[in-house]
Amino acid sequence: MVGLKSTLKALFCGALALAAVSAAPVAEVPNVAVTAEFPNAIAGLTPDLISGESNKLKVTFRNSGKTDLKVNLIVGTVAESYDFENVIRNLTAYRYGTTLKADATLILPYTIKMEHASREVGLTLLADVVDSSKNHFSVVVFNSTVNFTEPAQSWIDLQLIFLYVLIAGIFVGVGLFIKDLMAPEVKTVKKAPSMTPEEREAALEKMKVLDEDWIPEHHKKSPRVVKRR
Image (cartoon, rainbow, N blue to C red; front, side, top):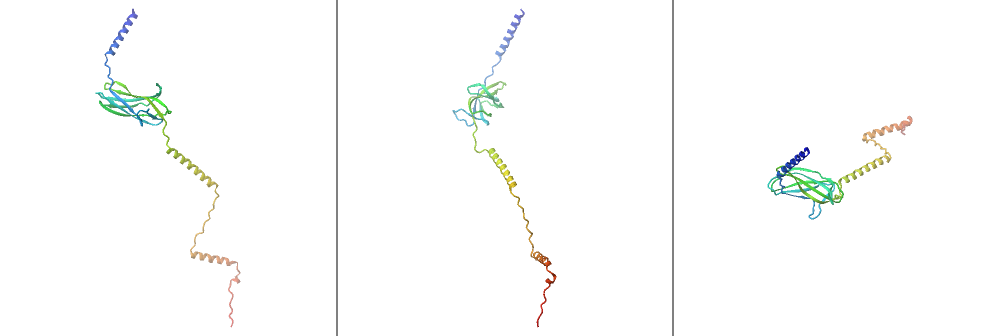
């Protein structure tokens, strides 16, 4: 008897809860159209994402309703192209909190940056839109395949050029150092200072006196000249 009362009580409570849910008003889905524009996209072809670089998308919201909305955030996932439930990576969630006016258009940026091998993958982007009653709605921004591609190689790489210049400078410096070590030492000859004519004449006179020191005294006297009558 106790078990029957408990069962009836549980059924009664469940019926009340179901009635409450049924009586609650259902939020009206906002009339919003969303498109995503990829950089350098060609109409009719699968969009490309460059691996390792910032791919900046323009997400356009069109509110055709009569009340203002708010774009809360945009999230995304990258999955296998043959199975979108097989997620490879979750993308960065960007928060905006931007008001989308009634009967107006709003453009927001969204950047995708990740490294991936060059191949086709599945991309899903969802926007969280909030109405005036704080109800949240998930709006599909993009749900299709994209191609990951390698960045274009530039012939002019400033970092590589700087590295080559640095290495060349090191080799030149080492070569000059070895050359200085191997080269013979050159002795510098000091030049005698230049002399004035007076100083030169005095030096010659001094040398003349020194040169006559070895001559006997009787030879230094001049001979007398005898005059004949």
